[in-house]
Amino acid sequence: MTRLFTLTLLAMLALPWGAAAAAEPEVTVTLHVTPVEIAVGDTARLEVRVRARGGSIQNLELADLKKYPELEIISHQTVRPIQFSFGFGSGVQKESSLAHVFVLHATAAGTYEFAPAVAKVDGKVYRSTPLTLVVQPGAGDPQPGSDPAAVAGVATESDLSGARYDERAFLRTVVDSDEVYIGQQVNVTVYLYTRLRLSPQSVIPGKPSMDGFWVYDDPITSLQSQTIPVMGAHYRAYVLQRSAAFPQRTGDLTVGPPKVTFDVGGGSLFDAPERVQRVGVPVAVNVKPLPQPGPSNAVVGLYAIKAWLDRTTADTGDAVTLRVDARGRGNVQDLRIHLPPIVGVRTLQPAIRDQQHFQDGKLSGTRSWEWILIAEAPGEHVVPPIELHFFDPDADAYGTASTTALTFTSVGAARHSQPTIEPRDAEPALPPATFGPIRMYSALNRGDMPLRERGWFAWLLAFPPMLLIVVMLGARVVRRREERSATAGAVQRQLVRRAEDALQANDPRSFYDRIVASITHALDSRLEEPVGGLSHAALRTRLITEGFDDDLAQRVINELEGADFARFAASGVSKDEMERCRQRTAAIIERIQRSTGAA
Image (cartoon, rainbow, N blue to C red; front, top):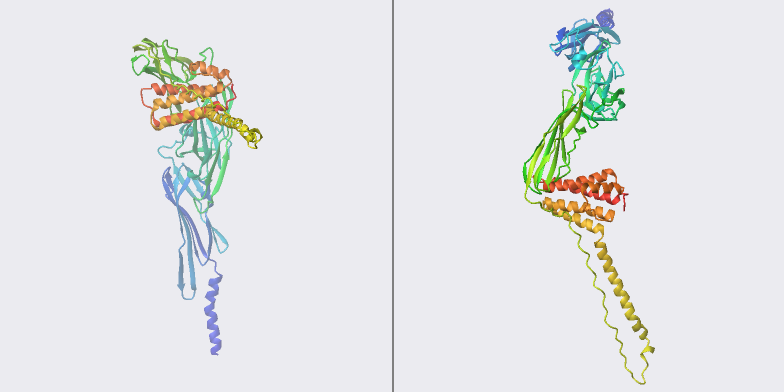
């Protein structure tokens, strides 16, 4: 009887345990945001949570968070509290929860609808209620009915020229005009449209090819974006490249397809990192010739020009610096001006300097020329007006900018310029070989063997001619050594060493004298006749006639003119500039020696 009572009591106590084990877990899934309405640029706190009593949480997911890159996740926190409760007759009950808390930054206005969050507990799926977040336009955002393209400077769904549409990301190339004159500026901008959450540091753009254009790139120091609606969705548009392109020939030119590679994802628990690559499409530009009639040497742009002298009086033979500045809108590297000849004045090759800057979508700058004018006769010398013809595409008309005439006076008698090329030292004459008379002595001794019959007599006779041959061979060796020391290569090396010594001594005048001597000696050796008496223009003509290429001939003239410029310039010459001149001269001499012109 006692045993039966005990079994009955144990069975009654086990009933609640079995009922508890068979009961369904209590699961609650919630999704809410605070506040439910914000403005662009504000933040909101989004929380998705699941609570389970009596079950095991396996997963919690909010898939719609990937749909809206306009909502940037600036922080993410995961919370996993677990609780236990005890009760008599009901055993031990486990209560657990899992929560994801996101702080979102709104970058675009709109209504963002989230589907229910999904949780899985003990293999069964549970869902929350849906959620709606409203983002109102900020103070600087376009209002409904305005044109977003006018704000961002990029296209909306009504204009996707220069692009191949993709719902995730695509590139677009924009040219401000697809029909221009030769030399007219074309602004080329490459945009990246994306709905992906990218890392700006991972963006690697590839420049489009621009054959037939001279290109000035405006550097992009940081990626800035604006939100643009395209095909009913919000895209962020980044400027990857901004260039001013100047067509150099007429006809149809093509801006090649741009490329870009970047990383996306990793911003939330549900976003895996991904490498994305996109390629754009080419864009055609029709280039027209300048309208006629018009000056043949006109450049495209709008320019002003002025000129001045550094002094108006100088001694005859001294230098006066003429400076001309052309400033305006356009590609200043296209500018060419011609200085008319001035009677009684020798003009050296000008030094040219450029300054350019890109502002408000226009490239402008200044090109400066500096001539060294050397008066070779006393009196008043007039620098005539210098003209620059240009075509202004905005006004669709030609124009001319001109300087005023300038005068300077040289006083004193003309001075003969010192030669800049040192004469080659005369080769030392070899002293003639002299030999004393050959004297033979013999004594007539009766009864002795004649000398001619002695064994050493033949060697004695052979010794003088052998000695003569040895002396002649020695003299020839000495002569060849001296000839080798006087060859063109040896002289060339000696001149180069003297130039290097002048460079180390920081003696510009001696240095540039040696530079001129080195180049002239190389030309003398190559052409087998002296060229020191030729003017620079005549020398250039002679080099072209002898078969030297035009680039080498021009470099030779430029370096000779530059040496004269350095000798006569009022300001000092730096040691760094002399070192660069030495390197250029070495390259020119090497090209002269390897030239296929006249040997």
